[in-house]
Length: 354
Image (cartoon, rainbow, N blue to C red; front, side, top):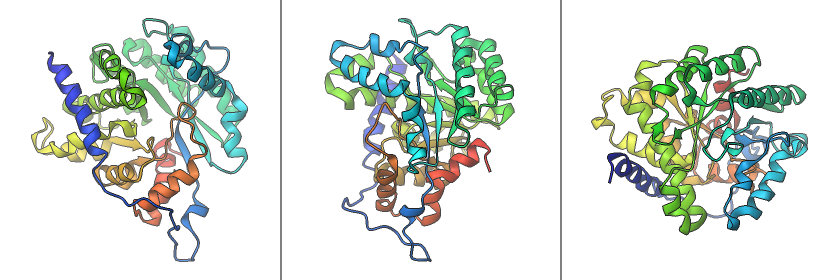
């Protein structure tokens, strides 16, 4: 078995272990009160960092290529992904303050996982138009094929400078390559130089995804969390954070295992003794799984100022995130200030808003 496979399996095991990092008693939340006696839940402004949209002009190949057992689910997801009115409904209803939206290239990719460069450019043009139609409700991330070298870097710069998008959205891996690969370096350098964040999003790694498929959604998400964890560790141990001081990346809560491993083994890191400082300077994590133990663990490992509300909407759509997130943060016993920061403040700061 290859060294990389051993590494991926180790990071995946940590993902399960880290989920039990903190024990939090479940039950109905009573609402933490601030000094004015008002429930923090009632006043939370929430910005959902992790939201997807695929307009009808782009074929959702993820649905057409899904296995028969998953096709109905993906058809339902596709209807939500295409619905622009649904995308902004929670803001119109006052449930959310805003969404940060992206069009994931891998949902419209061909059988080899590739998207033509002109289609990548069309994606970003569409996101810019979408944001312009819904000012203050949507903030946009540009999708780029980070493994496309200098051409990807030029598109990243166009999307940020010319289109006014707020950050980049990239796959955390491509085949045997992780995000620290030389092919991805030009895009990372652009983000570092321009001071915009990169959302390093999970993919479905093979053969681990096939191996875990018999275990349902937990198995397939475990595979995605493993590769997201691997990408995080690659950025640290591959020297990227040390070499690009302006780089800021966001990983999903599925990468909690990689984060726990990086922190727990920081004294053995290639970046020691600066490993912990590098993680806390360069890394943000979202609340995708919306669980009090994971939110508390993320805040303790990175700092509450590095955790951001994020739901993976509408791939995961369990209703508005407000009540679930507020309940989880209260169960995690976070301070009022930390709750507000995670709900919106950290995201606004990262995007350079306000």
